[in-house]
Image (tube, rainbow, N blue to C red):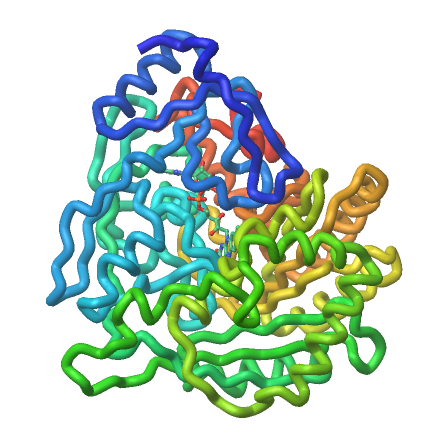
Amino acid sequence: MHLSLDRLANVTGFGMTAGADGYLYRPTQVEEFHQILALAQQTGRQISLRGSGRSYGDANIGSESILLDITRFNRILDFDPTTGLIYCEAGVTLEQLWRYTLESGFWPPVVSGTMFPTLGGALGMNLHGKNAFKAGPIGNHVTEIEVLFPNGNQETLTPEHPLFHQVISTAGLLGIILRVKLKMKRISSGDLRVLPISIPNWDGQFRVFEQEREQADYMVSWIDCFGRGKSAGRGLFHAGYYTVDPSPNPITLRPEHQDLPDTILTYFPKSIVWRFLKKLNNRPGMSFVNWAKYTSSRILGNGRPHPQSLVGFSFLLDYVPNWRLAYGSSGFIQYQTFVPAEHAPRVFARQLELQQAAKLESFLGVMKRHIPDNFLFSHAVDGYSLALDFKITERNKDAVWRLAHQMNELVLLAGGRFYLAKDSTLTPEHFAQSIGMDALETYAKLKTTLDPQAILTSDLAKRLHLDPRA
Ligand SMILES: Cc1cc2nc3c(=O)[nH]c(=O)nc-3n(C[C@H](O)[C@H](O)[C@H](O)COP(=O)(O)OP(=O)(O)OC[C@H]3O[C@@H](n4cnc5c(N)ncnc54)[C@H](O)[C@@H]3O)c2cc1C
């Protein structure tokens, strides 16, 4: 194997604000992973791991590095339909998982708002879902990982092994996850009972999350970031509850029941919807869209539970293909902060005020409830997260970064955390303060033993001083 110029490719994070050229390799066999490691050692190049490229910022790109894309290493190796234990290569996606197991009555224990992440990428970031307040992150449901370390060792780790909680969550910087055993969630129906509740302000948001916490299986709330004064924090909360279908072969467990329709409002092909969204993708347009969504939420279906497929409820963002193109050529960033429950009402309210004062309101706000976990770079706290999408233009870029840094300060004062999958703006100091010196020292020691030549990197690792070579 050698490094040739025809391998050069330009890849970006999902938000399209960060891109890099690298040498792209897509292995299909374990031996090729070993060969790529050897190639990096011979040539002095570093390696950046990449799954489906769904992290928004610069975690899945590495300038001038070898881009090790795992998406072709994607076989399901074993599935036990009595226990729900599935054994897969790390390039298997959440979509592959549900399509393979649903008819046997199983669903992935934790999913993101899109079905395209790979298991390797999902565990690199330790992603959470709308059930984070009960199920924690996806790593909580993994029973085994096989990891290839840059020092040449290949190890099988179970949750009892200290490295298990250190490799998962550290953004692909300590080892390459090759194979995963995951415990799927048993379900009897492919439909949830979904309860929408229109919420007038922040008080209402926090109240409803605490009220529904015991009964609900999933909770998420959309926030209109243009709401101000008494209406600040207004939005639409959804709780999802598993249902029971006693029939022997429920129709709801078939993929054709789950598949998202090709059209929106019966007539519009979904493939062209992003072009309409693009016309509205500016401050007045999105202020109107948010207002219209909130206003209709007060009337349409408010407080009335209805059935919805697991796919429809979980992967709302996959309804509109290429929706990110609506943000235009300079892309967008997602910014998600995690704040302890007692401080979240004040911090989120202030984050919104800062956006409004700067006339840089997020076009989309999403709130979730979380519980802590013991992974090394855990982003979770016993509290809430608020995810915000900011359109980036040549003109506003510096102002958005300034705003993000102001919002970071509030989060840090409250003892909050950040999520590397959504990050573009953190400084090394902010990251160190949030994760704590103990975690950083542990990481540094592990990096020296597991990856002594600092082969694994990314542009995020360089930006946050997690790459000793940088
Ligand atoms: C529309 C949308 C909705 C989303 N919703 C959510 C959500 O609800 N909850 C949530 O938590 N996240 C969410 N995300 C973020 C997404 O789940 C994470 O970014 C996830 O890591 C993406 O997986 P990927 O396969 O695309 O990995 P990539 O983005 O390509 O890589 C992610 C990280 O994993 C590392 N990595 C890749 N492969 C391996 C491997 N084999 N071993 C070790 N490390 C590896 C990479 O180096 C990188 O640091 C969302 C993203 C999008 C675009």
